Length: 369
Ligand code: M6R
Image (cartoon, protein in one colour):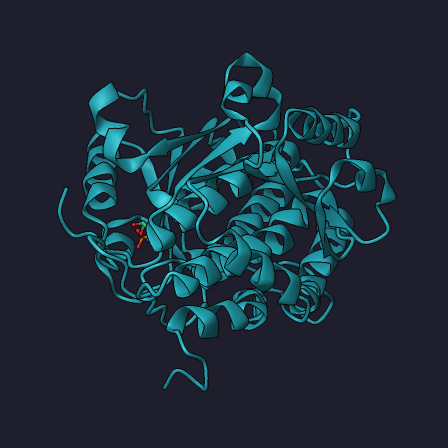
């Protein structure tokens, strides 16, 4: 049932092109326009929404972080991302104009269930983005948008993450269209980009040998750092989480711009640092800034593993190893850049002889608070 793979995780990593494709399936009409009738939420509610709060845990929360960049850009609605376990303890400001988006693969994470209940008690509308039909969170929410990643068995979330980003993007586009922030043609153009992502993810999967080799080489590292910016920041956090949970290795993700405010002091000779470089086309010279962050850590002895687009030669001077991903629009980048990080964590754990699918101390769905 592992389809010839040693681990469910490896199988699920390879199912990611399909997870994205299936999550898009049936959500455009013949003309390429977005249809989300299944949402079954009163469009009046979505029109009057003045704030979105995403609640989720772990990897699902990082999907929310990625979505924040896209949804704010497309819809001009402020988006907050809150860890579900913290949400109700901070007395959040919720009104009937607040849309709470609860993201959960399992639909059973108790922290999220409790946060959903709190939000609804306070009069907010809750939309669940979930991978499991009939689970608690979509049942208790006002509406649900399902990810179609298929069952995820490995404790480490992989294909659900890509599907969650995809579903959040569909929701963002739907809101932008409904509220008049984007013309139907603009929405169609982004949908076309999304439809190209399964192939782009497949291209990354076809090129993982370098990362696998690196993982075997770095298996004895004490700590690994991850740097990213903009949508690459949550990808850095996700890369670090994967390494912690699978390889029991200290790992931290940072916003690259924050480096100089403290974390750079951690860097010493030989410290592995992954740098997720944004596209050279990205706004506000972000690309140049991240490349210079890679140079800064390398000048202090770090061993830099740079994830960069095909053809981006500006990174060559600051990289000990370049991991290439296909060129995709900025907001789509997380769907490709996270894949080498998943493979890296899996391979490090495997090289250390650990149980990749069932890491110690963890459960697939966390049904206690
Ligand atoms: O089922 P959920 O999406 O609610 O689960 C949330 C987290 O427990 C989950 O993403 C966890 O962080 C994964 N083990 C990460 O790989």
